[in-house]
Structures are given as C-alpha cells and as structure tokens.
Amino acid sequence: EYIISATNDDMSAEKFAVYRKRSKVCFPQPCSHLEAYSGFIPVDESSTTYLFFLHIKSENSSSRKPLLLWLPHTLGMSSLFSQFLGNGPLGIDANGKLYRRSNSLLRKFNVIYLDQPAGSGYSFDEQKRYPRTLDQASIQVLRFLRRFLRIFIEYKNRDFYIAGESYGARSAVGVAFSIIATKGGPVPIKLKGVMLGAGFLFPLMDIIDSAHFLHESSLLDEYGKKTLLGWFQMIREAAKRKNYTVAAADLYKAVMNMPPAGWITVFQTLTGFKYHGSTIRSRQPLQVREYFEYANSEDFKRVIHVGSSMVLDSTRRDVAMEIAEHDFFINIERKVKRVFENTRVLFYTAQADAVFPATNLQSSLRNLDWTWRDSLNTARQKPWYKDDNSSLELLGYETKIGKFTYVKLNRAGHEISLDEPEAVHEMYSRFLKTT
Image (cartoon, rainbow, N blue to C red; front, top):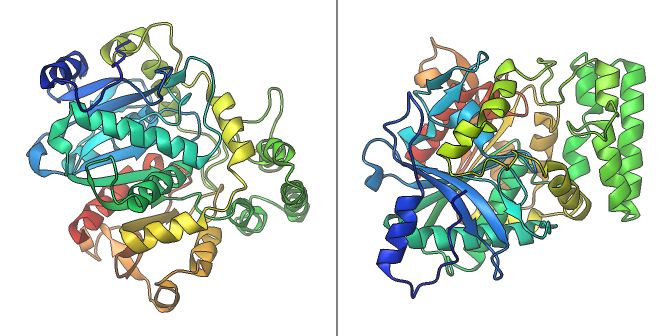
C-alpha cells in the first residue's frame, strides 16, 4: 500500500510532488484515461491512524470545477461502494463487467471518495482505536483535508462541497459544522454547500421507527406492526436509561443490515425481506455482490495502492458498534441548524426508504427550530420532471426556500444513489446551478 508520510507546511514543494506522483492511479478500462490518485493519509499525531482516499479529477476543465468530498453511507463501509454502484465514473454490473458511467459526479466536480472514520473500508488504525463520536470523526476528516491540500495545492481556496447519504449525511454535517465554526481555520477551502441524502440528522428514534410506515406500505400486518413497535419502545427505554450499549445492540437485532452472527433481524422475520433498505426491493441487486468481489480483488487493490493482505470493510462491525454506542443517541440538531443557516443545503429523501421513512424525516425537518422553519412549512412543493420537461418522467418533488432545497425522490430506497443514480445526478446538477 502507498502510505503518505505526515506533512507540514514547512516541507518542500518537491517532497509534495513526489507524494503526488507516487499516489497516481491507472484506472482499468474503460476509464484508463482518467486522472486519479489514491493512498493513505495519516490523521493523528503519532501516524498510526490512516484514511484511505481515491481522488478522481473531472475530465473537462477540472481547474474550473469545485471539489466534492463524498463520505460513506454506511458506518464501516468503503466510499468505493458509491464510486462503483452510484455516482463514480467506473461502474460494475450484475455480471461483474466494468463499464463507464456517463452521468457521474465527474461531470460537475473533482471528487474525493474518503473511507472514514478510521476502520471503514480500507482505512485503518494500527492500534484498533476507532472514533466514538461525530466530533472525533470530524477531526480526522479535517486533518485529512489539511494534508490532502498540501499535496494537491490546486484546490486551495477552491469551491468545496460535502456530500453523503444516511450516516454519511451526519458525517457531512459534522465536517461542515467544524469548517463553519472555525471560519475555515486550518483548511484553506471555500465551503459552498452540502448534499444530504436520507440523512441521520435528527434524533434517531424519531426517524428510524418505521412500524407505521411499513404497515401502511403493506409489509407488516397488525401483529407485525405491534411487534416492531414493541422493539422500538424497548430501544427507547434503554436509551432513556443511557444504556446505549443495550440500545445499540437491540437496534441491530431489530432492523439494521448488520445483526449479530446467527441472528435474523425482526424486520426480516416479519417481512420476509433479506434486505432492510427499500419497501419495494427484498434483496440487494446482484451488482452489489460483484462490487465487493472486485473491489476486494488483488488486481484492483494493486491499482489503488492497497496491500494485498488488506480486506475491504474488515473492521466494519467494530467501527459501527463504537459509533452506535457513543453517537447514535446524541442529538446533533445544534450542528444541523448551524450548517443549514450558513451554507447552501440540498436535503433529499426517498419514497421507498424502509430505514428512515421520508415521512419521518419530513416531520423532523419541519419541527427543526431554525430560521426558515415557517417558510418551509408553508411552501408548496413542485413536481420535478426529468430535464424539466413535464412530458418526461416524474422524478420527485422539490421545495426551495432561500439557500435550502428539499427534494423527495420517487422509487428510491435508503441507498438512494444506488437505486436512482440518474435522478441523483440531475438533482446535484440543478443544485450546483443555484450555488
């Protein structure tokens, strides 16, 4: 693997040029023409904690395009998931064939896919000490950005966006809040906006209690609704007692895609679904399996400067449980409000989301006490058609208030960029025009 040494502002430009050259990536066909870089950057003082990144430059006029940081949607998983299956230029299909995605983020941005917090994807900590809180994880990202910008100096003072879905949206808010609170501080970059999909931004039990939604979607009968409501109430009571270890463990037993070994989640038992993410898809698509196999292959690891002995997402459970016990039940609405009021925001939900139902997220958003609350609650949504043409497909519904855009996407489940990549691409393009 290519591990970049700790850097400081006193190092020579020649040294940074060496780091950059050695991190260069030669992507496989059909994306071998792309300019890309990858490696591991230390994010602690003792250089035992490293975050893996994959940076891909936009194909055309990259010097005039903003920089976007994409964060993983699931705790402990790699951001490469989104690169291959959602918004990156190199896609993989259900047969394991690589293809070039025409409408990738590269059309509008230079992109960093970052495995964070430490222990996610290919990132690692030699001491196996992983962040427990959003603040700790955000500090790691800020250190990464500071060191990344020393090597890729062309992005200093460039327009900058942060994007993520699910827990990635929470991570994005944490990083954006830190940048806003320090007015950029040691990170010489201009934050212009955040994109937050199916975001874990509000008190967990307000948005994850899906019993009524699943019943109304015909996935649960009365018995199923009552059973799931009982589990959510049990989790609430454990959290109220501040027994977060029990609350987190019960949460994973009830509804998450990472139950204890040998355990079938309550959601799976009641619905027959093998996948907790969508009300209209009972299993993940076949290309997800192909992605894991390819991204963990020795050939691809060699391409992206990852050691052959490293295993993708190998410490996912450890990372997820640390964060779940110490962060899941913490209210971050103070950070959310600060971000919402100080930069442009694209907040989007999914019609078929079985994890954070859109109705739950919308209710929490409307109850958030911030500057544009009353305006948002009285605004009318507008149908959003492909290419703004009402004779084409209805992609969702859009509400705009000042610097805030709220979109509800049709058909998508919790993994929005996986389910509706074309719609997400158009949505991001529309948002970029307003900033």
